[in-house]
Length: 355
Image: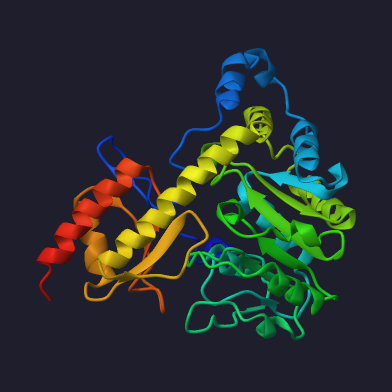
């Protein structure tokens, strides 16, 4: 090893879902919204001032922050925005998880948490989900350097009732509790209702799923003014211009169209509930997802074999070759016609499968 190589930071990186190329495929592997963004987003893109791109964007992202604050009924000083919820969460890790005590997050959860903890040198422990993949609130009623968990959880899709979320926050008055709500719009009650009661609570959401803007990379957090100010201090210490001009403009328009937002959510939830019945009829079992995906395992066919067969058919789903997860497929809810094509293929596979 060369001398300079010894100083390179070595980490095991997060592995994002595959982005397959081509037109004749069905992409159900990265939980994107199958429907386009709100009509106002398209219009804002067409009307965007090309000349303005030569200038830096507003470092405070004021237009988007104010829009989100009004929509969610919080103060502008309670909103932080970033380049996707990953950027927001990474900033939160840097800002709040600086104790020598371990940060707590579930053993089966969003795998980026472990990556950030190891990248930033943060000690962590991972309380195990129970046999039904449920978070046990009591596992977080102990000394720690902070708590983070998704709700609904990923990749299971299971939702923790708001009263149980509050139990976790209430038992951790000396640390920051982060609730990652990337999928909250598809089902469940947001922890933002608890913000007035708990100064140490941070709620993180994204435009990538329910608002159809994964390609624009917009995430945000809501919390007490003290938490948001601390995150902004860290942000301005390494990258003051995190949000680009198109993201600020298009994100603001996406929030304004409530009717389209609700219509799209209803379509996805309707398709999800239909899909649950179809999966059951084919011999699949799965946690009762409240997200825009289903985490399914077949009673006879190994998940790895199904995953490979689907790939050959140009149907892409997510497979995790990891303990407790290796016999499950995470399948994003697509359009009705995409799901019909998926089920037609699965019916053929199930009826013709031989061990």
